[in-house]
Length: 87
Image (cartoon, rainbow, N blue to C red; front, side):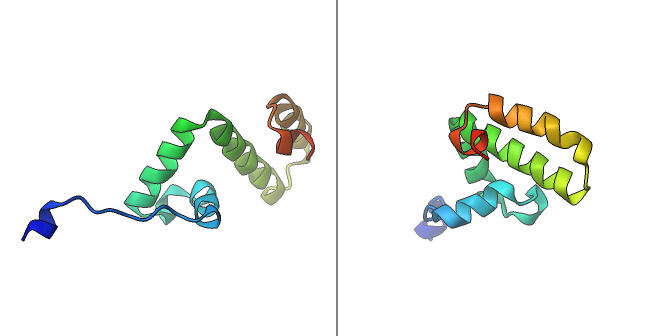
């Protein structure tokens, strides 16, 4: 049938869904969710940088790595991302 030949159209994610897609491990996401995440991060270097900083912060807290905190703060402040600078 014709419907099978047409590409699958997925509705855009909500802001909350996209937030999770950006932070969850790749293996937790479906192929279309990964594609959206990669497109968003490619389109917005600021979002990509914020995701990287957020994941680093999560890791240092999870591992209780106090030594890495000062470096993270320096990187966050120099990121020029308002939400990271005032954190």
